[in-house]
Length: 172
Length: 310
Image (cartoon, rainbow over the protein chains, first blue to last red):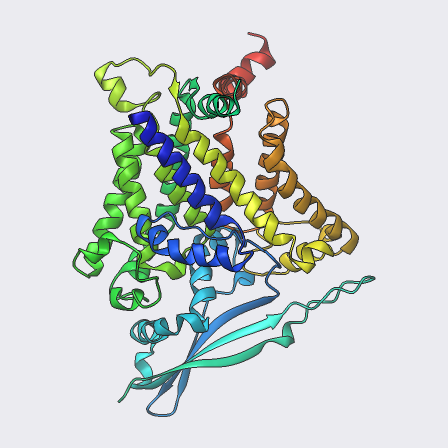
């Protein structure tokens, strides 16, 4: 009896694993994955496709910043940790921060922007400038240039672009 | 022999063959050490990530995570102190797992903590967290206290004898599936097929450049293309060859070199280490003993005796 139960568990685990990690190929697979999604979520055994640098690696570098605008018109800035400025130990220590910055900037996570701006307001607003009127959140990114066949391009740090993606009105 | 009988024999010999459970204790200790490193590294950010005064209060966290996901935080008061206490209990239970005190119970709790913290702030987590979760879940079904267990030592109990380690097989299949999934996706990637993928990866400032790498590697497109194709081929072929008992030791050394060299070059936190732990599940009892003997021969006092001859 115990052996049969174990067999069933093994078969179910393997079936769920195969459905979950196999890249989506056709509509039937997609439908099955979506139907099973609540079970994966509930059991905590979800993993999905393993898209580590796949199908293509990311081609942009980025970071976040926040501009604090005070009621007297002055401004201060918060800038997220820049990996290029950190030691190997600091990069290890702050790995989860890079994960967070990488995900919070995405439109699909817009519901978390207000809480993030509010956290920055509570922890990084300067006392010297009086009350904060609003906070602007920006994402900065630069596209890694394509390599030519004969010579690799020089790093171009001037190619950073900035997008405003959220405003927190504090004084209202 | 009928096909059905043959399949049953194969199934039984694959999943239920009796083996020495020493490997399960190695996995237990390895997982506990990695989770401790994970937890202690992020100890200073518990409130930041999981507290209600952090970047993602509980109510907001439910808006960015799939609503079907479960977490013990549903049932607990929403405060910074609760997050800190839960994190503390998580650390203590991981320590108990390391020491071998009611390890299967600790492992079940650790799985629940991993799921709960990951669902509490989904924006922090990536593939390595999934590997931690799956391995912790499957270890629940293994005799984790077979060796080096504090509880057994206190009680004076003998080591466990041979038994079927079917969940270890599932860990092996899980690790192979990760490589199969990523290699499949990469076959659809233009940059993996034209060989420029590692060029782009080597320019990602948050992940690459952990330790020094000679410029002649990073600035040589031909070399980067050769490395890109080599990685893709290895990810495609390695997970197949590892099932051959003759080739397995060489393939596992290949995976070890692959993960350690990538970890040297890139900052992926503990991903490569938890993957190495997964590959360790392929080692049998004799191979473990052999590795243990070789490691012991590298200990300082042995080296001293070898050099001095006394």
